[in-house]
Image 1 (cartoon, rainbow, N blue to C red):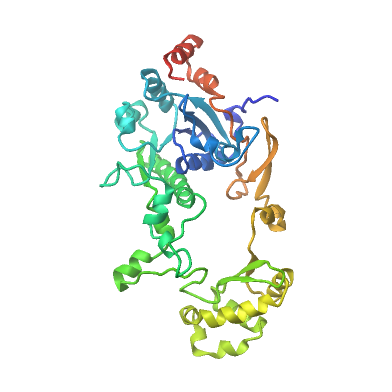
Image 2: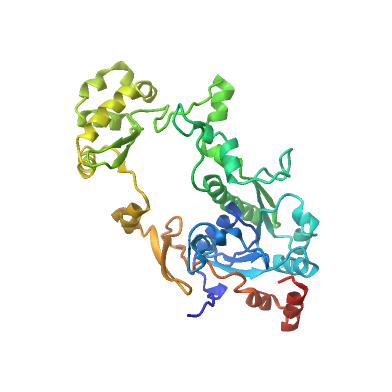
Length: 405
């Protein structure tokens, strides 16, 4: 099968006509570029000739082909370029002259060392938006440190409140901080592009991965500032409402129950045969219920333990109370609600054939996004991109001889 990528002009979606250079690796920057590409932006993934994006080798592979890259690299054309070489630098500046957005995650000072800092890039294209995604941002005492999302999960306070009360702080087994930063970066890029419509020129986005996850955690700094309150680890319980936990059914399935609304909490208590608890003064608000979580967990847990999981879900649904089975990926792939939303969709891949992956992040009624292709081989579109840029065959060969490609 052909591995040729569709022409950029074939891209559907509201971001059609937007050109993005993805210089980043692992994972926030590249995922931000993916999100833009999903809605029609032409994304060119620029990788080092000898050191491709490490996500190509992360996690399981099939026939030597990394599966994570198929997701992260979708809707991107791929080219190689060594930015530290004179030819690589000059070529990147030419590419930047045709782009709307550059996304990078080098340690602060690296682009400047190569003569590719903001002064050079903005001189090449005054309307360019440069998104700089790093662990700690472009300034401050930690700016020069190497860092990954794991450090943001630790430093933001996320790990400190995650886990059982008597256990250690718990890190997520996936790139949580990176993913939150990617969503934020895509939003930041679109905000900067909106600003460009007002000012006529581009700007720099400085995104530190330690910051978006802190925002997602909610009012922790405000609580501490005003009350000196530090949220403890509470396991699956919440400090704001109860019952809120996971409970095991008679047939060994785990289910999650949430009662963020007072009316839902009351329905749950009636369902599990403990309506007298509703009359307790402390039951009237979430914090009062949270203070009696042990009692409420016992009531809900004992009831669920006497019923099979499917029966629990059906009875909760009849009672208009909130419950969900705790899924693993096998359940996700088989669930009718995910199927109705086409949340996991099939993509035809030249290397692997039909593959299933998460669909675009949201649905638009008039200008929907789409997965046009999955992640492509390293450097597959180098010659095509450079030819479109106006380089001759001799110039491309010279760059390759120099080691820039």
